[in-house]
Amino acid sequence: MATLLKVQAGLFGEQSQSTQLADRFVARWRTAHPNGRVIVRDLNANPLPHLTTQRFQALNTAPEDRTPEQQIVANESDALIEELKNADTIVFAVPMYNFSVPSTVRTYFDHIARKGVTFRYTEAGPEGLIKGKKTYAFLARGGVYPDGADTQTPYLKQFLSFIGLDDITFVHAEGLAMGEQSRERALALAHATIEELTSARAAA
Image 1 (tube, rainbow, N blue to C red):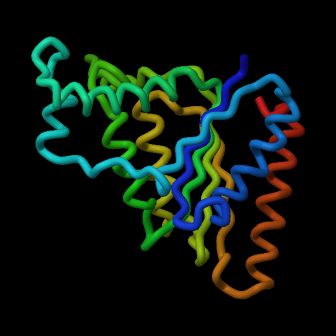
Image 2: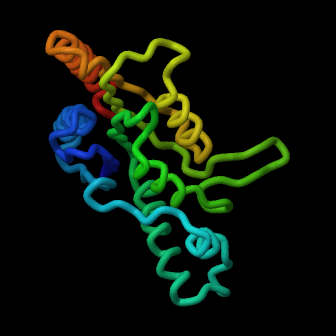
């Protein structure tokens, strides 16, 4: 069974522009995969605790040496990683807040970046261990960020590639807070891109 994991982080839930773009893609994916399964990880509705010394130590302690409290933390992280491993297609819906991704996304990344689990270091450098997944990132922004001024896309690309998700397609909708005309133009362009992606690749 084909499985899609959608990770969303907008403050306004289903009304967030990034989530609505992702949902538009997911709807097309469902059409192409009528028996497929969609898993939603809503980081705004169910945020993860920020990384602390105690949580970091729990994630880096050998399973046989963990305390019961540390095992609870490790179990949370393991569940997030299993979602990634079990998905064929991964979709991120990420707004831009204060020139970066929401803190909930960074916290999510803190809990899935596990040495020996999602990445490892080799003589040739780091190697991501979550491989063979097609990833889409739908990014919404109030302003317009030309090449060189975008901190959101490079960060996501760097982190996701680090854990092995290097087949990434980005869909941007920007200028959403710059007036109705700018908003409508940006969303129309993003919608056209989604239509093209799902038609060309059968939403694979």
